[in-house]
Amino acid sequence: MEATIVTTPALGARLQAAFADLARGQGDLAVVEEILRAAGQDGEASGAGLAEVVAGAFENARSSQRTTIGRLLRMQEEERRRLAAEIHDDAIQAISAAYMRMQLLGRKLSSPADRESCESLEGVLKGAVQRLRRLTFELRPVALDDTTLARALADYVGQVEFDASVAVRLVDGLSTQPSDQSRLVLYRVAQEVLTNVAKHAAASTVVVELSEDAAGFTLRIEDDAQGFSANQSGLGLRFVRERAEAIGGWCRVDSEPGSGTNVQVWVPRMPAAGQGVDEGGP
Image (cartoon, rainbow, N blue to C red):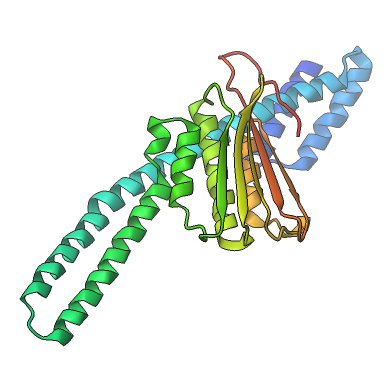
């Protein structure tokens, strides 16, 4: 019986599909290993380079992964936008109406104790509205659609509940603006890092710096807080890293206990259709 000959290009296509399955969380490493062994045997017989087959399949799979994650990020942002609109148009409006009714009721009360109770409820309702407005801002800041990345970050810094002793300095070194997707990733990264600083870092100074080079854009956030060891980075920084890597960027975190933290995130300029991405290194 004559053996079936599988050409290297066909193995490359199988390898690409296997890598794509792994990227979606549906693959099996054993399948990849089997294809690599077959590709190695075929490469020896035909003179084709195994490295080229693997490199091409891996790059195509990585491109497919970025496309999939980018689509998921866009869907997530659309859901954030929808939720923000619903909170603004429904919950905030209803609570605001209740607040105004409580004010009117309070003016009609003659008992000091009743007026005090009414004023207390007014305070609760007013606080609820403020928290919901903050939530809608975090879900989808309008400034991100209408202005520069630096201005949107400045608006966010103004909204973050930093302690009065924390000084935040924003340095805008951008002469051009990132694409919508890159700008959104950098904004969400800054939001995550600054929220962590406000809640946990006990910093006195925070520097937020935007810069660019020929290949892409860099966001650097540095604080003088207590820092942490590498094994304490947690889910927040994993979120930051995944966001950056999803569009071909990278994240670097330098921190040690007692010496503050420096987070740098680089994202590429979005290329024209059909061009590749020139990735910088950390």
